[in-house]
Amino acid sequence: RSKSAGRDCFTIYDEAMSAELEARNTLEGDLRDAIAQCQLEVHYQPFVDALSGARRGFEALVRWRHPTRGLIPPDQFIPLAEETGLIVPLGEFVLRRACADAAGWPSDLAVAVNLSPIQFKEAELFEMICAALADSGLPPQRLEIEITESVLLERGVENHAFMQRLKQLGIELALDDFGTGYSSLSYLTAFPFDKIKIDKSFIRNLTHQPRSSAIISAIVTLARGLDMSVTAEGVETREEFERLKALGVNFAQGYLFGRPQPIERILFDAPVKPSRRDAA
Ligand code: C2E
Ligand code: MG
Ligand code: MG
Ligand code: MG
Image (cartoon, rainbow, N blue to C red):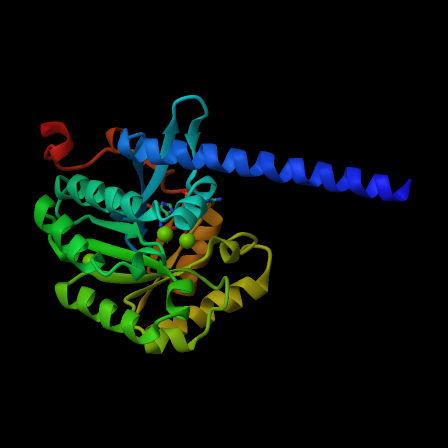
C-alpha cells in the first residue's frame, strides 16, 4: 500500500511539475510575443529633492499589458526574462523608450532606468546605451542607471571598468535596494556609485522603530563621507518623509509623491516636446 501511495505521490508531483513547466513555457512564449508586439509599457514614478520638495526626475518601471491577463507587474516576468535571456531585448526597449520620453521633458528632469545583472554580461551593452542616448538626443547627464549589488558579485574588474566608462559619459550610477541581500560595505568604495537607494523595507516602520532610524542615519553619514547622495524608496506617508528629511536623506521616492504612471498621465510645468513615439 505504502509503495503504491508513494508512486501516486510521485505521479502527482510529476504532473504538477509538468503543469508548472507548461505554464512557464506559455508565459515565455507570451513574453516573446509581448516584446515583438509592443505590449510592454514604461511607467514613470517621480522622485523629489527632500529639502525643496521639487521634482528631480522619474524612475522608469516596466509593465506588461497582457492581452488576457491585464497589466502584469515586473516581479512576475523579470525573473523569467532573466532566465530566458529575453531581458536583453526587453531592457533595450525600456532604455530606448525612457530616453526618448525623457528627451521631451523639461531639461531639469532626469530619468532613472534599472539594468539587470544579465544585461551586464552583454558585450554590446555600452554601445547600446550610447545608441539610445544618441538616437533620443537625451544628454547623458540626465540618465541615471540603477543596479543592484548582485551585479557586483561576479566579474568585479570588468564591471568596474564598465561603470567607469558610463561615468565618463556623464551618466549617474545608483546602487538600488541598498540594505537587502549581501550589502557589503566594500562595494561602496570599490565601485563608482553616485547614489545609494535605501530599500523600502527600511522606510516601513520607520516612524515606530528607532532601529530603522539608526540604520538610515548611518547610511547617510557613510554616503556623505564617500561623496554620494541618498534616496529613500517607498516613502508613503508625510510622517515618514519628515523623519527622513531630519535624518538627512537627499531624495525621496514613493506613493506619497506619486505612483508609477503612464507617461500620458504625468503633468509637467513646462511644455513637453513630443517623443519619437508620437512622431512614428
Ligand atoms: P525597484 O527598482 O526597486 O523599483 C521600486 C519599486 O517600488 C517599484 O515596483 C515601485 O512601484 C515600488 N514602489 C514605489 N514607491 C512605493 C511605495 O511608496 N510603497 C511601495 N510598497 N512600493 C513602492 P515595481 O514597479 O513593481 O518594480 C519592481 C522591481 O522590478 C523594481 O524594483 C526593479 O527591480 C524591477 N524592474 C522594474 N522595471 C524594470 C526594468 O525595466 N528592468 C529591470 N531589469 N528591472 C525592472
Ligand atoms: Mg530601481
Ligand atoms: Mg544627473
Ligand atoms: Mg529598489
